[in-house]
Image (tube, rainbow, N blue to C red):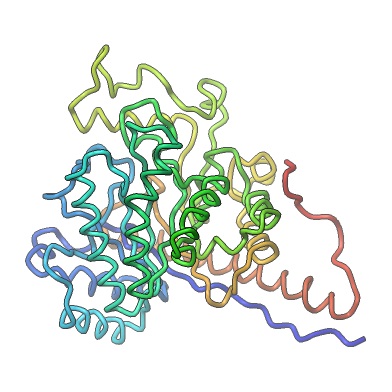
Length: 413
């Protein structure tokens, strides 16, 4: 029996524009909001990114969370204080054509279940503006968080999700959009002792939330933008996560990927465990939480005492760490996605997200080769996975031949 055609199918590469927040100085982009998008498109072309994930956020003058309290400050590359109308969209489209850089999706990462109704309404209004901008720019997805009301139990948050988040999904449906949820648990988002401050943090919650969405006719609008760094943070590995989704009949839920790693520091685990630092962090003074945003940042010690974000390609190759789920095995991640998820690789985006602390350089020329190198690594590792998958699962299979060996298995380390 002759072998089948060898045709590897690579995923589509993109980068989140928060990788360089101050590419366009604040004074210039506040006066001319779309200049920031134009300059990021040009920068993307220089570093070899064929697409961007366009970051939106509340303007610093409007945000309820000061930048000083954020582990990874957000970027309002897309400034939506003024309406994003057809003329603004046409300007951005011209820049996309000139640079030959496309748009994977728009991203707005905020707490959509904020406890304060006025704060929550402000965030929802911006999300609707992001939906409108995505529709005008021809994107089919917006990525963000669900969030959590920290004053409520997790079960009560499911009820709140049904009451306040499902209406957002109905607005996405009306515009032909999908909302893809990133699964970061956001442990340092507030100074409470809560670890899970984004209720959509793992497959169990995703399935519970999707069932709510199905009841309201918006199941197709709720998808996951999977980020393996957060799986590592919670002691999971991608292959087991994907296998669980397949076993449960929900392997259609993942619709895109953030490409960001996490490196677990074993000494921190020995000191604090996976719950992170629980006391004497510096975000409280005695019985009262600090009002200083710089001190509130210490709430992130729930995470940072034992883990550090990885920009793809910057962490050492560490087979033992891969087996112990202490770092992302990128090759197996890309293989497992093809083997276990219901995706079309050629229509699926890999979005590089840069949150590696020592390299978060707000200097265009110094950062350029770092991002270029990470993008090249991401492209190469996906091409290798595509080749392995095509050879093993298509060419060899059509010839009646089995791949050699066993390979990494789910639910094992």
